Length: 280
Image 1 (cartoon, rainbow, N blue to C red):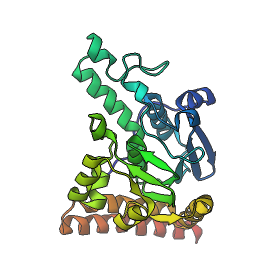
Image 2 (cartoon, rainbow, N blue to C red):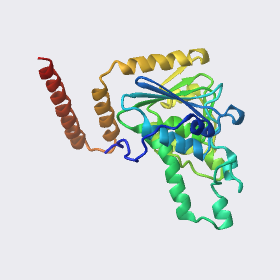
Image 3 (cartoon, rainbow, N blue to C red):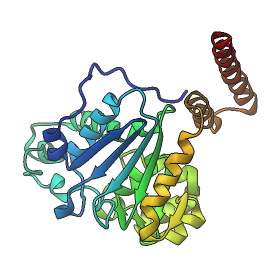
């Protein structure tokens, strides 16, 4: 089954101070939430706090939000993880990813739990009640690439560049990006992209299916707005049920998917019938 919104007990959305410390901006206007990665002094590189705050945003979005747009400030989506996270000192105000291992204050189980916490900042973007859009300009490196891969749609400016940098740093992609990459391009192309850590430009991304749409830099904002407007014309319940079906499809047999379609349609028809009866 697909992932539903988590019951976390968190009810208050992140405040301006939390967002600022995480290098994020958030605006919510009706059914549309817009998240901007805003650390231009670090090329929009992200830290653990960025991802835990992203998770906090996902846990506390208003119920009427249907569309989430993620972009980077300026001419770059994100340079990936702030490499200061791998130094013993870490990034100011945050724990180092490996510091606890080097000084003996943490073990592998602690690190596993920490990475699982960071992954929550990416997993909620797949929720069936949301359609998520990555608006990508410039570089989307490593964690930035994985964040874009977590979204349903990727609208790219023609200067966009993807790169899975982690293996070149002696690491693996661990922020939920390996499955969507393989699902989109296949295991062999995904292996080549990851293990060469090469740059994949906008045109190749379109050819590989990594880009939903490629437009000129000056057209990016308008193209995203057009996509949002088109998505909002579809009934929310129908959109949620359809995305849920699509997310199940790869793991289901044909018979299982047929059954899931029937069950979903029965619920939709029942809902529509009740609405019609209420209006009579």
